[in-house]
Length: 176
Image (cartoon, rainbow, N blue to C red):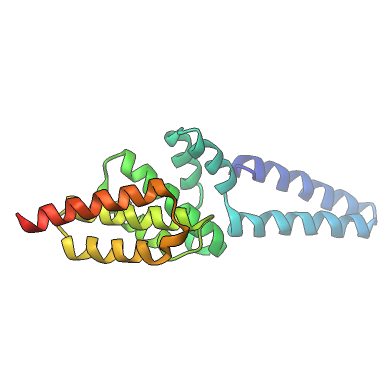
């Protein structure tokens, strides 16, 4: 829930407390300060700045979202549940920048991890299918649409409409 700057500030405060409490021979509070430093560092590697990035992503501030996501140096170290959401947001940012190859890669990775809901998972598959149609990879688009329909009963009507549109477009394009 911290940005990297705030995280460093909190770590420096707890480190100063660690030194002070060790100097004063109050080892219980020194141990607590050390524990807090370790927890903040572990939290960085498991969650990164995703909570803040998600806040900006939902209000469509993609520049700030991208800045926060770029603060995560090793996304492969993120918690599995967090990694999927990281890839999903990066895919959305790449789509906004019209970098379709990178968006496709991020959405493919997002589909491999658990997301918030089945609809988010289907949305990432549909994005890959849509990009594949635009790039002329019709077999890949068909495969991803089939994957998207795996949990057909849990998909919202709006998402089903998008899938149907893509299927129609795929049929049109393949016939011509």
